[in-house]
Image (tube, rainbow over all chains, first blue to last red; front, top):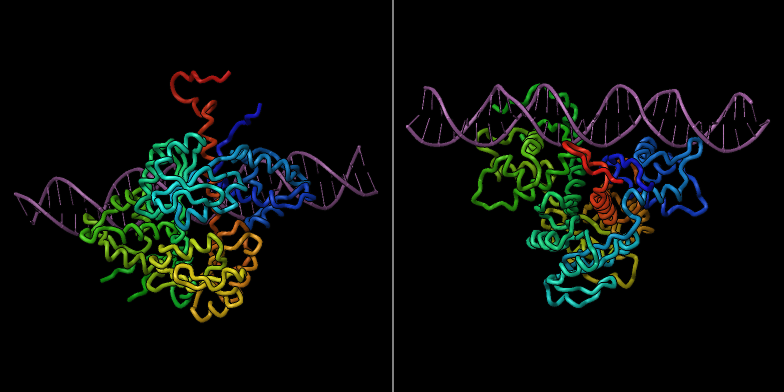
Length: 229
Length: 229
DNA sequence: CCGAGTTCGTGAATGTGTGCACAAGCGCGT
DNA sequence: ACGCGCTTGTGCACACATTCACGAACTCGG
């Protein structure tokens, strides 16, 4: 037992499950059941989506009643692989690296910081979020001794690829990249990228559109391609 | 001129344009043209996607030659609304707010920090990234005087909705939310959310999947000898 | 001016995600 | 035991995104 069919879970669903989990975890203890509609409201999505997402995990709801919160939390956690903690190592103890190391949300949600490394001698030895900053040379040792499989790149752009290479060399198989750089890694290593400026640029795009209600928008059908002489 | 037909640009494309722009901006000056394939390699996507994305901006390439870098940069910048800067205001001067205020990538890419506010008297008055931290009561004044339309929420989760309400009340129409909280805002306000722990959870999901090659999946071509039990 | 070699732009095919709408299942009151 | 109200689980249609594949348009050498 203990292994259900393990259907493939759509990526879009995977990206929403952590949010459901967070919401469910924060619910009052006296609420023992929740409907797809309530959960949908809290998550800012629609109820059908919640039901479809949860249905990929199995049929854990009860018609006419809803989902038992505690059980659902357990199932979502299991599906996400949160039955145990995943220690992470942070490369780069600059502003962002420090903020991340101090961020309680990491450890709270199962991702304790197993180490922080940097190249700057001035930073080495200082303690951030309860963890002492080490020299980057100790990276591989740390990764192996603490059984780290997830690395966080919080270096300046120029050092990001080197950081990634070190992580991969040490055996890390997932990387969260905060540097505005495309990392090249072996095919079997997962990378997710968070580029803070990109997020603003996307918002800026919509801002700009909003402020030009003047013309067009209506010429959408697009039959002839504006020949430019 | 200056107003092309303004076709609708797919959201997926909008999310990639900033990346193309960053790459193009960082190219050597002596490279005056670039092909969709070169750009695709640099961006880690495939060439057809690059061409289709760029085609939404208009036909700015030349067959047999590629895209003229300088012109393309100009067009992408224009499409993204980066013909002028977009000042942002940061709410919350904790670890994350400080890291963001210090992050050079913001101002470099057209998003100067017009202000940082907090409620904590101990933080008010300190200078971060060249900007003085003000009391949150001054938020509305700042937003109006600096013509800010984008706000960044970097508060603890409990204060995030209040921060959003203040921002909206002051006239901000786009919000970048770093707090692990669903914000409710009027329909005409855009919100993007970055949840650092969620990113790790998504990586954790794939990690976990990878570490269970035990059964299924392998039932492929010749001689499926992997029968477990 | 022509043919070979490139590279764009885009129609069409495929793959992925969303949302409606409804049958099936459950609990409760009578 | 039965019917009613509620809520799940999912088939289906549609929308959106990705990728292929190929004609069109350009450069360059001879």
